Image (cartoon, rainbow, N blue to C red; front, side, top):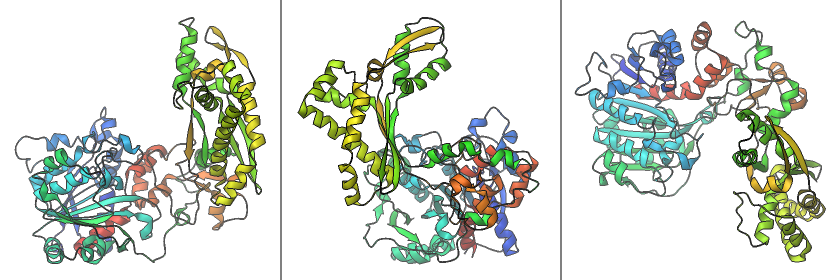
Length: 613
C-alpha cells in the first residue's frame, strides 16, 4: 500500500496530451482526496522541432488543461544528458514516474523485419528514463508501450524487454508487467498495450512480492498489483521455467550478449532480483462492456457546426471505402519498374516532369490491358478475381528454361508464347499454374473455409483459365502515349517484360464498423477525409435510431467518420480535454493524431487505484 497520508509526487514523461494525468485527476476526484500530484511533466515532439516547445500542438493542449507549473516543454535529452547530478531545480523529488514512452520502433505499424528496437531513435528514450530513475529513485514507476515490446527486435526476440528489466534490477526495483487489451475489461476500444509497473523492494508492494515470490502463478494471477487491478486467468497450462537475468552483469551487457530466437517473456510476469517468472494469461471480466454505440454524440451539437461537410462520406465514394476495407487477394504492380522503363524509353528527349511520368505509369496497365478480371460465382456469392500479364510472363519464362523471378521483370517473346501454347505438356502446366492463382484468390475473396467447397470451386475454373491465358498472352496490343513533349508507341509485350506484379493479400474489415462492439485501435492517421481501411466509419442512421436498422448500411445508410469527441471518448479522455482542443481550435486531424498516440485512461486509472489501495 502506497503512503496515503500525503499525495504521491509524480513526474509525467512523454506526456502527449496528458493521458496519465487524466487518470490521476479522475482518481483524485472519485476518491475525494488528492492521491496524486504532478510536480513535473515533459513533452517534446521532434517532428515539430522548428517550433518552440510551448507552441507544439500537444504542449498547447496540455498547458491549456493543466497549466504551466512544473511543465518542461523541451527535448528530454537536455535533462537526461546533464553532466553530474540533475539539479532539483530542474527535476524535483518524485515518488512516482509515469510515461508512455514513444513506441515507433516497436510499433505494429512497421513490418517486424524492420523493427529496430532500442537501437532506433525512439527506443533510445529508455535510457533517458533510466537516467531519471538513477537520479531521483522514485518508489514507483508505471510505463506503457505497444505489446510488441516483449518480442523486439525482430532478429533477437525479447532483448529490448530484457534490457529494461535488467535496468530496473540494477536500480533496486521489482517489476510486474501485463499485456492488456482494453476491450477485455469493458473499455470501448480494442487497444493492446503492455503496462510495466516497477516498485522499490522497500515498498509495501516490494515486501509483499518477496513474501510470495516462490508462488509465481499466485503473484501473476491474484496477489500482484496488476492482477488485482486487471483480473486474469492462466491461458495455458504449460510450465515456463524462470528466466535468469543474473547471467548478465548490466543492462548494457544484456544489449550486447543477449541471444534468443524466441522471446522468453509472455503476456504477464514479474521480475524479482533478476529472476523472471512469466505466464500466458487472458482477462477475467464478466461486467457489461461499453460499445461504440455508447459514445455517439449528436451531430447537431454546437461543437460540430460543419459536421455534414466534414464527416459524412459522400455516396459516390462509399465504394472506395468498401474496397479499402474489404478482403484483397490481387496482383499489384511495382510502379518503380514502370517508371524506370519509361525513363529508358524517353532517352532524355523533351521536357517531362515527375508528375507527368508517374501519371503515365499509372495509366499504362489499363491502356495496354495488362490485367484480366473475371467474375467467379459460387453458391450465390460473387468475387472479382484479377490476374496480371506479368504473372504469366514468369511462368512462361520458367517453362522455357529461362532465369525467372516472380519479383523481377521477366521478358518473353512471341515465339516463347507460341512454343508454350503449342506444347501440350507446357500448356497444361501453364493452365495449372493460372488455375492455382485464380482458385487461391477466389477462395480468399469468397472466404471459403470448407475444403469440399474449395475443391468444388477449383473444378469449375477451366474455361475461365483458358480465357485468361488467351486474353493476356495471345492478344497483342499497342498504344501511343504522350508524356510531356514526347510521344511514345508502346506495345504490351515490351512493357510487361519491363514490369512485374506481385500477389497482395489483406483481410477484410467490417464496413461500416459495428456499433455494438468496441472500436478498433485508433491510429494516428485516423483523422481527415481521405479513404483508409484503418479509419472508423459508422452508419449514422443506425446510430441515431439506437439500433441496427434492416437496411444495408454500406449502400443505403448515411455513412460518416467518427467525430473527434467520439475518438477521445474511446480513450476515456474527459470532456475538459475536448473543450480545451476546441478552445485552441486544434484541427480534427490533429486531435485524431493525439488519440492514436494516447492510451486508454481507464486502464491506467485501475492500475493506479490498486497501487494506492
